[in-house]
Length: 154
Ligand code: 4NP
Image (cartoon, rainbow, N blue to C red; front, top):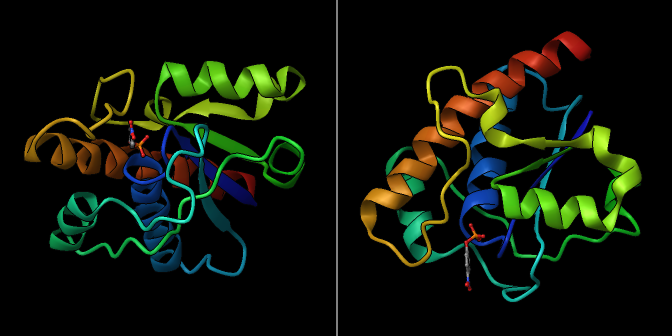
């Protein structure tokens, strides 16, 4: 099972989703069965580590974010991944536009939440500390839900 998390820059939200979900996968003993990656629709930050504010907030909660930003590749990622999980409605539109025939593989991260009612993982880039904490809260909730879904499909 291969999961790709997608946001705009691949330096805040999707690296957090990748790091947290990978950690849950490892804890569940599924490291050999689940591949986790992340990408951005914009390509503006390609080659960069995750935003240092995002890394600091994640590390304070016990999650090391190690990904390097890359651009979503419609020629490869739609075929390679089983689920493409996006952070907001703009990501959803952008990814769907690149591959309308892959609609069944594209999911909103918040659809997997069990306790949060938000309809997106809000972009924290231009905000303060609370925004980065919120990303982690929502991503943790959604990651737990996604893991349950995947465990049934393995
Ligand atoms: P991300 O956040 O999509 O969660 O990685 C952003 C990163 C960079 C920018 C916007 C959002 N930016 O405008 O450069």
